[in-house]
Image 1: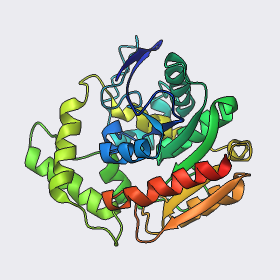
Image 2 (image 1 turned 90 degrees about the vertical axis):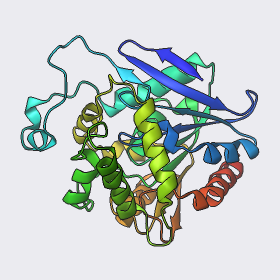
Image 3 (image 1 turned 135 degrees about the vertical axis):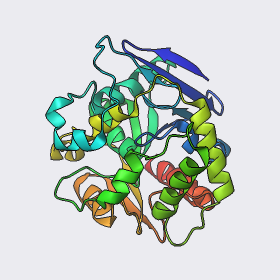
Image 4 (image 1 turned 180 degrees about the vertical axis):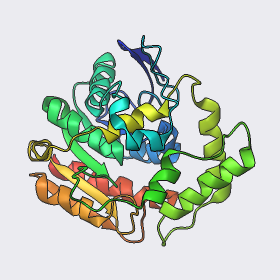
Length: 298
């Protein structure tokens, strides 16, 4: 574990498994800390013979973004941003976040990796693979999207719950935890039952470990200002697998089919009853799907 210092970001990472093994890098989604790649999930890859790199994206968890612009507080109203986005120029882009991954891997003397991205992390993964094709062996996109504006959009109320909790953790811990757990229930999928006690512990852990200097709205702006480019998908030249739940309320199945049909060397696995979350009961099958795919490409 450790930090790498970039020009305007500090990235925290952890490494699991032996140094001489093939490496998987895990890319998290919007405002999602690396802790959501749970230790049990990472260790299953280690058991399959992989080394695993997990990290906090800039402006999340222990990773921070710094700017010399004193006006860049990004404590604005989300509704105000959605109505007047021109007032809030993006301090960085998803492509900058993809560049962070290259910097991290180079700092660890890692030349090639198997790339796994979830949700927004899947879009960052697409950009990384396109920009640094020599560093990518395979690409796995979990519950992700191309962000094609013609695809169905998620329910506005669900997006609002995801991006702007109405209760502050320090002000009212009980209400904050209830909001977060209710949101997880809404995205979990019908086949799986949320372990509320475990989820509450994860939420508290995330709040405790998060740096006070992160500004999660900057990630929201980076995603909201991302401009879909079909050449990104068609330009991906590494073997790719898309794994998607058929009950995903944020990126429905059309998003997965779009990825499958547009990326040249792509397979699709559909998980029945899975939503926009990774239940621990799915860890074994997900790791097997990804491991088998990697073995097949080799």
